[in-house]
Length: 322
Image (tube, rainbow, N blue to C red):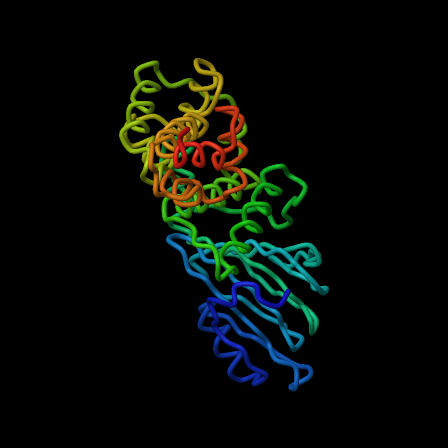
């Protein structure tokens, strides 16, 4: 896994004291016991985003950690090695991944050679996302169940999104446009909330009333006016006064698709116009990024499905009209 997030180095050291200090800074009021081969370096890379951050860790020593009060959640995905997590005294395997939460008594142990990718989510940002989805600010702190179910479809979606984002951020040849980056971050937080059981899961699982037709129309108008900007659940909730769940439900009831599918169709239409301009100077990548698509493969597939032609073929015809 060498090279993951290497553009964002935090520490690379075989000095256990330096490593201990770096980890304590990153994870606030926590303590770390480290043992093992001092000739084998530990590599930690960290990319901060708006409300989240992504960490890669490849550890040269065996680590036992006790975590203090945190203001964030951490969703870890194990790439290699074995470990164990104890949350409030309950042991769970860390061989697939782990979950760290505020206000929980946490211990984590793993052997030398352990590698992980971890998503760090600010607790305040996650609470705001939850409030936008359910339509009311949470009245008590979010409390996640101890043992995550990585088989949940939303958890699997989170892992796919995380893997894609890590791949893009690790590449020196790829730049994710801000619009796509903000929306990927939204997808990560939403998938985290849906894919884990917590004290608000019943509000996410239960039935919800649909938003009014005028609110659906207002979302469409807002998207059409702001298609080239990041679109989040919080924004849609703010402009309509409805919860994210009720808006998504109303869209599916009245339109047969979600607001994000509508957003994608609007962006594809703008991409068609850009690619179809005679003498167009932009590349397919330029157009995809300008229209908020961070995944070029997905952009090409969506475009062909909607217009029956690859974006590269349309651009070539526009540049070289017969």
